[in-house]
Length: 160
Image 1 (cartoon, helix red, strand yellow):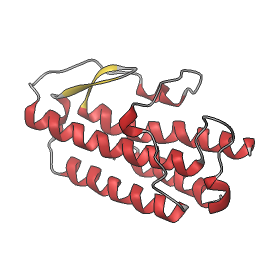
Image 2 (tube, rainbow, N blue to C red):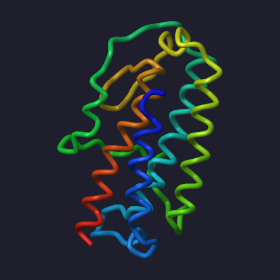
Image 3 (cartoon, rainbow, N blue to C red):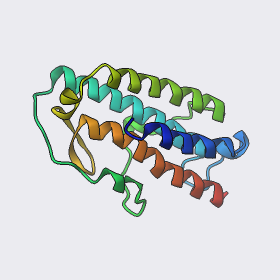
């Protein structure tokens, strides 16, 4: 659903190919390690689930146009991560990161399996780059965001 499983599978297959030692190393000043990238993805999905719940609870019914969220993977366009989704060194191993990502995915799936599509299509909240997106687009965005950072993980490992 929403392409989340396929994109997560790609992310984890790559993560499993990296040793914990290599995953903890930063390629340079101000750059994130693979573990920090995974933590960012964990925090981001957690935040999106929270925002979706808030939009359903408090949001007015409104619609917005489809956004080109597939372009999230285009890494030449930089978006500064909000403070709330910046890594703080929570994960020490790939296994810990995978466990965290599994928990946030369970929360995402629980949320979307218990909401009808009309509700998800008729609530919105803003994205820093795309503007207002409906909740179905936010759910799909999670997967595209993971692929963006899969590319970042590959760049990070190459730079080590």
